[in-house]
Image 1 (cartoon, helix red, strand yellow):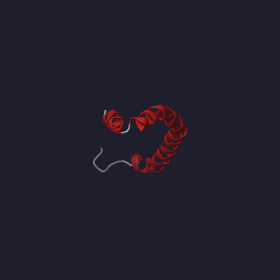
Image 2: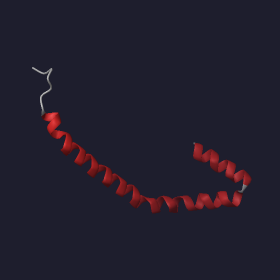
Image 3: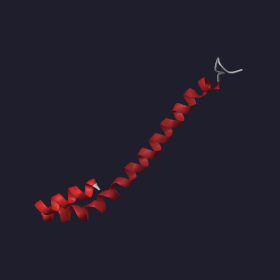
Amino acid sequence: MLTFLLWCILFVFCWPRAILALIAYPFVWLLLIPFRILGIAVHGVLEIIYLAITLPFRLLPAPFRI
């Protein structure tokens, strides 16, 4: 919603740039897809490393368990 309002303000003040932004937005989104996939992959690898490091501590019995 905020993006739309910013675009409307840009359209009022400088309509050629607003139209250019409207046309360029899908292409920028397509260019950023590989970086999103890379971010998801890096997050997954870091999560696996974190779980592998903390697994022994989670397997230890807690002192309050019977």
